[in-house]
Image (cartoon, rainbow, N blue to C red; front, top):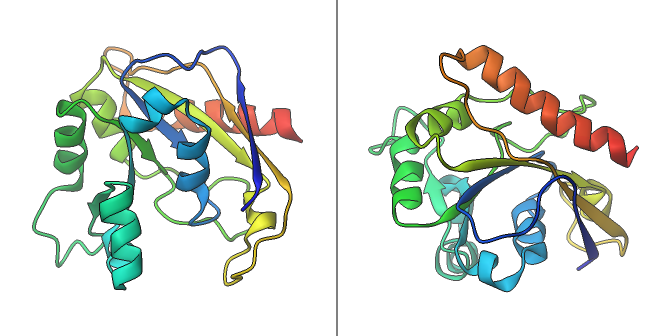
Length: 191
């Protein structure tokens, strides 16, 4: 599909349980992030993805659920029967690492990054020992713009930053702002 390049900046790709959180501009984001992880890390890492999208067709269900073992989150609060944070915590408790997009949706706006939803904070609070690793994905929205089916062959860069943890007594808004700033700082390295 494209040529991904991983840059590990202030962190190494070692076997630790982690939540990789990244900017989100394409449904190919999690595949690209998963692809650049070393095989032992890839085997234990699951994406967190939208149930309504990945169960929309048999092919998507096969890819999302059966190939990537995604933690499928129902984005419809009125219809959901399971707490999304509880689903992610359960996956962590099973030993998985996660790929999470805290913006909650693909960013097709002119904003560099959308405001984060609160899930990352709740995960950090529930499992403070797990590394939270920011990952800036550059160029994928040019490779596979929304609505396109044929990718443009370009190099994509994924920059992994130093792990974050929730500080004792750190408020949700302050933590989300710090996590967002860490991700944006990685993005500025790519511009």
